[in-house]
Image (tube, one colour):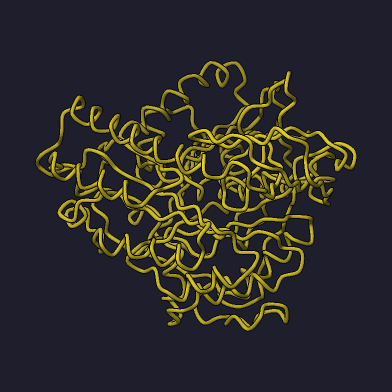
Length: 491
């Protein structure tokens, strides 16, 4: 009998991409995705460990599933991801109805572990200490018909005091450029228009095989792939961000004029305590160079408020940098203890009310800046990749949503003589911005153009790319493989 599965994903883009790999493996093993109203035979939790209450969230979800498991003993529950890597056997001890626990380094083991747990009628726990196979050699069932994540590295060599990722994901391991580009080409062949190159620190890519310019070369190589319309990447680290990457972004037409550059704090003293190996002047100088090369670039960031020991003067320094940086948007976080990190044991843990008050001030400032910047775009023509599940879809106005090349969210009205039949997710349209709000733009006039795409055809048919993993038959890591002829000389 065919068994169904459901994957519940928490955390970062890396976890989202890992879940696509988990789905690909399960479907290759004969499972099918459960419908929204169906009770799945297998529920997989792909967890995150960077929040103080991450474990409470997991065990709360597991507790909610316990009655269903009791009523249907054949149902299986699996827990993977960063929290599984950290807590290991504690998960089965606290929730003995869990069948499988697997870590960040062995997501390829899930189907086998599920089968073994069924056969042995007992929980299976498998946590590898280091990565043996790069995850992108595994099959994947992609979430989107028109965009895809492509991992270029896993792990991280930094030691930020607030972050637990290095201890759970391990040291950085770089994938060969030939395999990266082969995966991108495979996605484009299935109709994908946009890829996001993914890593914990993408601009240190190449350190493992001794080429500090490898990431800029990789961006340029992506520019030679026919049919690839948009290239994005996340996330770089300011300390490793080099001018050759800026040049590659500016000179490669399909690399989008958008940059996510994590600030974390504008206080040099706090940055030192965070072990962030740059200072505010260095950060701002990067932004100046990016805007000199790409005047229309939209720059986003991450900011932590209330790091241990943060003074009012430190926080004011953050506000000052935000005012100068003019971010188009910011992911802002109130500091919370990450168990197992140095910062969790630091003196000067701030009261909640102090952190909240500073957080509110930062949000107010950033919203005001984003609104000012978005208002400047009124009257500008934008090219939009029509998106699924983003923003509002107003029944009265018939608005749809799309992403501009700079990453901004735009709500538009699918009207006008330029429309070639129905506008679908994955199609490309052009519109004129009529209103700028703090977190989105609106284009209420008739569309200037509408291009139907293979990605739109696939989205309309409910088809998503399913790749079987990309391997050129060489060792998982180390020296670059020879790249396909279309890669433009990236090595």
